[in-house]
Image 1 (cartoon, rainbow, N blue to C red):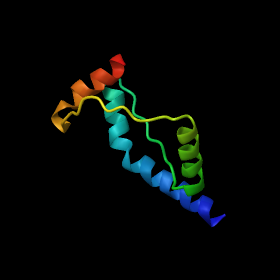
Image 2: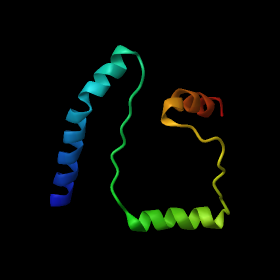
Image 3: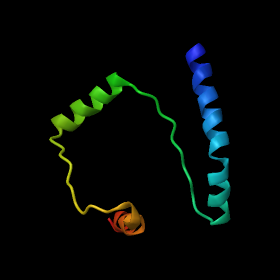
Image 4: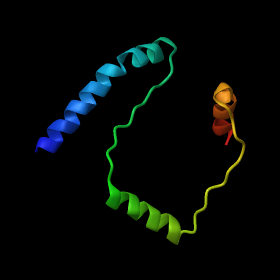
Length: 79
């Protein structure tokens, strides 16, 4: 039970910390999403097993610098 209380407390802190970002997103009519996750070695191993069985390999395309973030996101949006 203490674990759940700790998770909820962290979620609340992140919500408070991201308030400014959420206000800016609303102002510019864009969406901001934050996903709260926790480390889970068993679940990660299951994902590795699935990807290994499916013979999935990453494909590396272009490399962008931080100053090229907009261009990188445009490329992702286009597929």
